[in-house]
Length: 192
Image 1 (cartoon, helix red, strand yellow):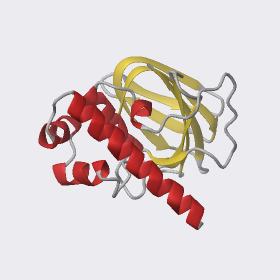
Image 2 (image 1 turned 135 degrees about the horizontal axis):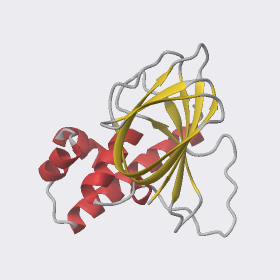
Image 3 (image 1 turned 60 degrees about the vertical axis):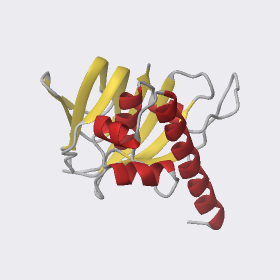
Image 4 (image 1 turned 180 degrees about the vertical axis):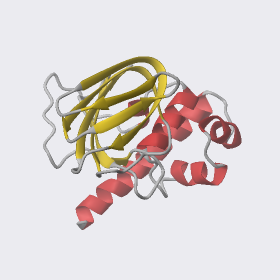
């Protein structure tokens, strides 16, 4: 990673931490209360709020849910624009869950005021994401390549093939398994 990229990542961590702290304080929650609601440890939350560590996407969703906001509201807000182009190398690096082998990806946003979040993931072949990933609102999962089983808690499991789309609405939890011999490429669209 270049020095500029490391500086950008450090700035992102500080900004995310500041936004989480501000949201927590505006709701008059202690760190212990927020950590319990988000099912994370208070020392980890403290590190996040101080910008020492950047939360995974899974943790960002847990924090957003506990605070009653979309995860994008906890991220730095880009300048408003009617048209936004996000280049292939851009976007905040994210992991799906707090697991070293977790699928990695990018969080892409359409600009300030946009209700749409786009996550671009790569899931290694036969990699099972054991932790549940929680959503609130509407989402569409588009499988660009590979094969993927998507388990929706208490609703069933759907096997997706290239170019299949799975739509979800409400409050739900999912976990994924890449079932083919190649890496699965996934776009996850989320809107509040």
